[in-house]
Length: 118
Image 1 (cartoon, rainbow, N blue to C red):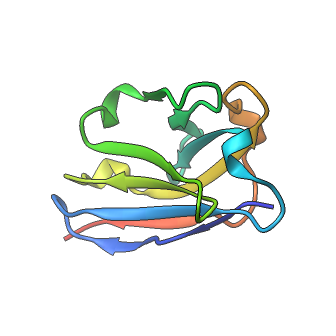
Image 2: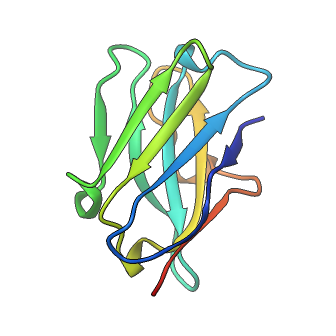
């Protein structure tokens, strides 16, 4: 019931903003996470924002470059990505879970393709 949008092709060093929206649930009541899966690689968690206190945590390789945030009025969670690198390429998914951050097996759906290439 989550819908990702905002993917596409971007050059290395560029920026992109992904959105995660839901017509069915109120996102501020859930902890929301982003994950990604590159071709031939396992899915990895990227970022999470907690429903308890809006605290955030990030995978080490994206710290300082990615920012997860929530706009409660728009019922949308964002992943702002800057200084993108080719290794950021992959299909990005968002997931929601009550209280704690979603685990890696809780992501599904179409996702948003992000391709970082010159």
